Structures are given as structure tokens and as C-alpha cells.
Amino acid sequence: MATKGLDHWGDILVVVVYFCFILGIGIWSLCRPNRGNVNSYFLAGRAMPWFAVGASVFSSNIGSEHFVGLAGAGASSGIVLVLYEWFVIFEILACAWMFLPVYISAGVFTLPEYLHRRHGRGRIRVYLSCLALVLYILSKLVVSIFSGSMFIQMALGWNMYASIIALLVVTGIFTVLGGLTAVMYTDTFQTAIMMIGAVIVTGYGFNEVGGYSNLQTKYMNSVPSVRNENTSCGLPKQDAFHLFLDPVDSDYPWPAIVLMSTIGAVWYWCCDQMIVQRSLAAKNISHAKGGSILTGYFKLLPIVLLIFPGMISRVLYPDDVACTDPTVCEAVCDNPVGCSNIAYPKLVLELLPYGLRGLLMVVMFSAVMSSLTSIFNSSSTIFTMDIWRRIRKEATQRELLVVGRVFVVFMCGVSVLWVPIIKSSSGGKLFTYMTAVEGYIAAPLGIVFLFSIFWTKTTEPAVFFGLIIANIVGGIRLVLEFVYPTPSCGEFDERPQILSKMNYLYFGVMLLFITASVIVVVSLLTSPRNPDELKGVTWWTRYGQETSGETIECTNSNVNNDITLEADTEDKEEKTACQKILTVLFGKTDVHQVEEFQVEKRRKFLLQGKNSSTLLNINAILLMVLIAFLTGYFS
Image (cartoon, rainbow, N blue to C red; front, side, top):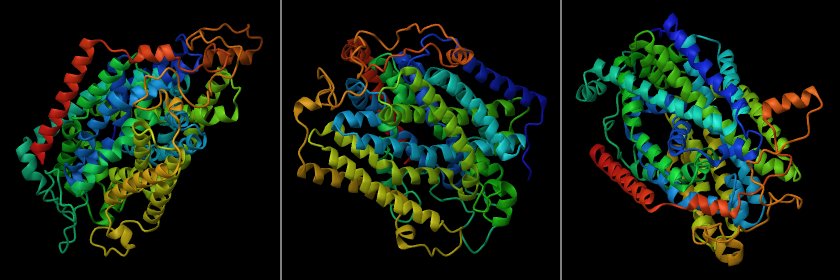
């Protein structure tokens, strides 16, 4: 059945108004004071309130891959993947309570910079920076572009390349012009839009199927009319409404998914630039913790706002969403493997009335743009602060700002080049692809940061070679999966046994143990740094008087240490039209080099009042109790 598009004037008007508003934020960013320094552009001047931090973290995480992937996983497999939403709340809280104080005491802009300060050698910083950029392209950028193109194609019927270029132009403009402040305030607005819209879809969906109890019954009967009767292909999972699945034969064995959604997710919630950068931009530690709690409460909602709608979509449109016949699937969604990824946009475009369809497509556009802006801003920060400053040690703030913005444009270009690759390699389960890639490449990073922060005897060779070995092993598995793709349902699995017999989640757990083992063994065989070099860079020394390692930021002896990053240093009067244009685009910049986050400011950031500390701790405990209750209820 052909899917309705956005062809009504009311739907189109909503979409146009939304994009005009987003562009308005980019233009507003041109008028802000203090745009012309690195601290303002990359860390929003470290002045963001708790609600903006929480909304931005959530919006950066709940991107288009969730509206496509998580809803699609609900349609195909049930509620099991909500564990990736609930159990990561422990990591979200751990970031604000345990990791962030160390990052602040170290006075860093980026997470690779932290490892440099912690271990005193630059190779781990460069390697981690390059790894992060590769991961952004291979995983985050790929899934965001793929799912975003799916939304636009289904809604507007545009050519894929035209859709992607239009999306990247709008996203790139206000990211380039506004920096993190524009991104975070836009994220706050988009989070509100996403919440309102997702609640509307859920309400319409449950009304259509007759409530939760009817959903349970009807889901088990949602079988496509065209299927191979001699196989289980197309049949709903019998354990679709349970969280802890068979540890051997299921697609998501419970021991592996528990470990990967807790220890395996440390890298994303505690060590990933895109997420931690939002907390680093908070006014102080109380606002950072408040933001993490708000994010945690938001993370309780995806089962209702995303997974259940995906399951409802399968109930209402089983021939499309649950198709298994390659010919049918090719006709429905251009993907012979399966069409579960279209569950959410299909529900929106078929079920909602005029006007609301436009609003809900705006919700999904918001998710796409939020993901892309986060990726662009974070990758720009990493490239500028960790790679470019090593190439150009005397770079001024103006130069760093120009390089950062140009790199965003470069990422936009790379995104367009990735489109045909995404189209040819995308499988039937986007969320599975995403978690697999991140498990093979990124999950070991969490182990590296855990040891670096909490074990003072951890050495630089240990974390460097531990990460290298884990990435080599994970990279081999990833290449094998591209060479030997998963067979379609009903086909005999002729892949190597490491693919056919070992679940990708168990392989990710194995990588975590390999990384930890290498770090422990090599650390015991090499000499740790002396205590004076560890001041301010571990949990146990976070209140040290100074940070260790090479001082990268302050190399200009003529710069007064009392000058802050927010200082509005007057440049000489511009003499050329080109210089005037640069001033309009980038703001008046301080020509001095970048100052490090001063020790006194770090101490002030980490100060907490007794009342606020108590309130935050109570909320954190309440959040963990809610996770335990919900897990027990659905287990």
C-alpha cells in the first residue's frame, strides 16, 4: 500500500514555519556577544542552565536513528531493546557525579585532551581523536543521514540527494554560525517538540488498537499475508513483551545486553565528546547534575513514545512493516531484507490527520537535525582542539574558530558522499547495525577511561595498546560482517562460525574483557606516573592544585593569566571587506592564544550548596528505584 505524503497545505505550512524558525536561531546567533572566542563557540561559554543541558543531552541521543531504529526494533523484536534506554541511566548519573568532576579539574575542552593530560603523552590523544572522527562517520553520521533521508523521501517524495543536501544546508548553517550555544538552545526547543509530538502519536496509536491489553493480543497475530508458511519468518517473537530473553538462542541474550547496556555504554555516556560536551557547558556542577537527572527521566519514556508505536505500526500495517518476502519488501521500502525501519514514519503518515502529520514529521526532522548538529559541533571541536592545535601550536582564537567552522562544512560534504554507501549497506534493523558497530569499535574506550580515572597505576602504554588491540580485533569482526552479510530469514547461514555462532553482543563483551586484561597486565609491567603528575586528573586527585602534563594552551608568555576567555578584546579596525565579512560571521575574536580553564574557576564550578546537593542526590536515588521497578515489571 502506498504511503501518504505531505501533500496538504496545512502539513507543508507547519514544516516551512519550523525550518524558518531554525534558520532564525542561526541568524540570532550572529548577534550574540562573545561569539568570537573558543570557549563560547565550543562550550557555550560554560553558562548553560540545567534544563538546557538535560534537554540537549537527551535530544542529542534521541535522534533519527531512534525514531527509525528503536521503533523498528519494537516492530520486529518487541520491547527488549528498551534496556539500552533504561540501564544507561546509571551511566548518565555516573558521568555527572564521578566523571565530570575529573574532566573539570583537568581543565579540558575535549576527552582526547583529558587522556593526554592524564598520561602525559600525545599519541593517545591523536589516536583517540582520529578514532572518534572515524566513529562519527561510520556510525553516527551514517545512521542519521540514512534515517533522515527515509523521513524526507516518505514525507515529500523528493530525490534522496536533494533531500539530504537540503537537510545538511539548514543544519550546517546554524551550526557553523552559532556554535554550541545555538545548538543547545535549538536542542531544548526540539526536545519539547519531540515530546509533544511523540505523545500525540502514542495516543492516536493506542486509541486505534484499543489500549495496551489489545496491543499484546493483536501484536501476536500481526502476520504478513505473504510469507513462507514452512518457516517462522514473519511471525512475531513469542517473548516480545519480555526484557530478559534466552541467553543462547535469542537475538538479544540477556547477560550480554545487560553488560553492553551498562559497562559497554560507559564510552557513550561518560567518554563521548558529543554527550559530555553538553555537561562541560553547564554553569556549575549542580546544573550539570540537574541536567543529567532530567535526561534520566526522559530516558524512561522511549518504551511508550517509540517502541510501543513501532509495535502498533506492525499491528496496523503488517503487510508493509512485517514483510518478509524480498519482492514485497523491495516494493514497499526499497530494501529486500525487511521494512521494520519504516514503522514510525508509516504510522505518522497513515494514522494522523492533516496538520498533525506535518507536526510529527517536524518532530522527526528535529531528531535528524539534532543528531547532525551534535555530530558536527563535537567533531569540529575534536578536530580543532586535538588535531589542528598540534599542527599549528601558535594558532590564534580567530584561526581556531575559522578552522572549526570549515571542518563542519567538510563533514557536510563527507555526509553527501556517504549516501550511496548507506543505501547499499543498510540492513533490515538499523538499531542492530548501530549497536554492533559501536560495540566493536567504541565500547573499549569506556574501559580505557574507567582505568585512567579510577586506577592511578594505569599507564599510557597500557591504555594505548589495550585500545589498539581491541580495535584491531573489533575491526576484523566488522569487516567480516560486511563481507558476509546476515542471510535473509529462512536461508541457511554459511558465514564463518565467529559470525554465525557468536552473537555480536557477546563479542562486544569479549572485547571489554580483552581491553581490561591488556590494561592491567601492561600497567603492572610498566612504571606509573608519580603522584605530582596526577594532580587534578584522577578521581582521587581531582582537588589537586594544578593539572599535570604538558600545558598545551598557554605558550604565549605575553598573555596575562588573568585574562578570561570571555574577554571582548578589541581588534584593530578592519581595513578590508573580507575582514568585515569574517567579523560578521565569526564575531570579534581575541587574537591571543587559548587560555586554559583556570584553577580557581574549576574550583568554583565544582562547589555545591548543601540543599542542592541533597535534592540532586534524592532525585538520583529515585531515578534508580524507578529503573528497578520498571525492569521488574516488564522482565
